[in-house]
Length: 260
Image (cartoon, rainbow, N blue to C red; front, side, top):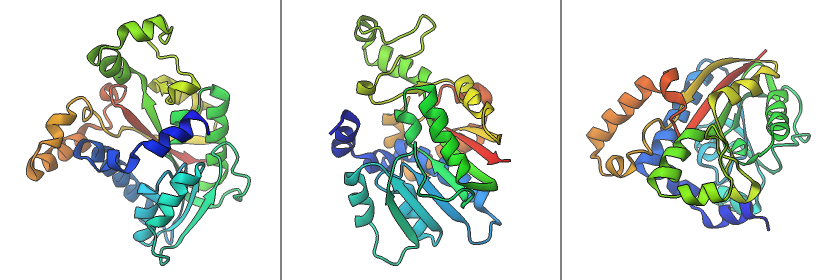
């Protein structure tokens, strides 16, 4: 068992997305999924790195035809436990770097909402993105999630008091980019790096969205909001989540692409 698999054995990913501040990412992503599937007759959806099924199961229970690919058996077990057998979903154990079990041009929407968090070289990222693009229909949509660099500098390095640790471990470049290794579990990027990955693909970017915006910076405040106030927070967040001046400060972003 590697460190990443052990992380998902012990980490409650569903719980992260169900807290009020964590749900901002889910609400935002689902909004854009709905927006880009509107008007598509009988859409087919692929989620690569489906985890425990927060998105795949939700979409399948809404009646969409879903294929969920997940690397870890533990996560697959949890995903399957949420199904009653009536959902139009196919569940496959597989790796984002090799989707050879899936035909080219098969899906109206391909979701890559977790794998880029855990790929540490440009070559791996390009391979995962290339596979996601390959299996998507021409004119179809690819949505790719990333973890962003600067929130980690602000929240982990400074706010949480880990400056000495990261300096001693040579975990920062001179221009304050994190240096991640496999044992660190997560890979951080900046907006220009996402654009550079897209540049080599037969895609056009439609939007780059800050899926949680400022929500993690004030998680305790958001979790304590009453439902009316939280609804207004979501209203505000959705009004500003496409602003370019805010995207790099979001913990997570969603790159929305159309296959040419």
